[in-house]
Length: 156
Ligand code: RB5
Image (tube, rainbow, N blue to C red; front, side, top):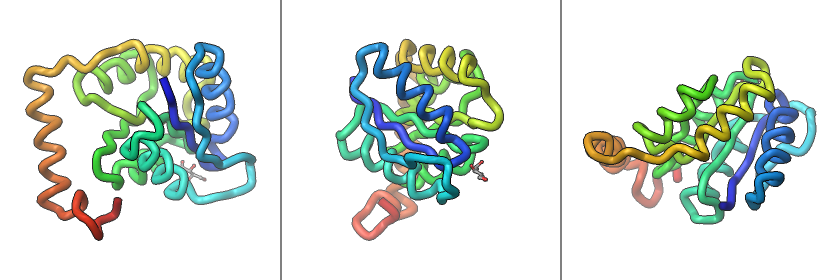
């Protein structure tokens, strides 16, 4: 699987750790930066990962910032992205099973590499359950269309 990764400075070390883990599992890692601990703006990297996933350059995305929150908000502005901040195996599993999340986000200041790695493995190993959850995913997509975000000239 091809996995896009991206972070700001506060998530950089966790991103490096998760990217190494992904590569060790045999996944192809596409790194959208940042590439150091110099202060940067998380929207740039959340958007880059989101565009990589929606554009087909990657199958899934992994984003990190200090909390996982800011970069998830940014990624979610890209139409077609369903980015979820997760903190443990349970939230990571449900993000896939119920929300069909295609980007998973972690907080480098809140979540240890060990817990984040376990959660990432759970995310990768879980499958969307469809059924009633499919209807809800479609309603999220409809919100993008009704807001104009999914059209040319939108935030994508
Ligand atoms: C950077 O200081 C921090 O605000 C950022 O990494 C993130 O936590 C924002 O949501």
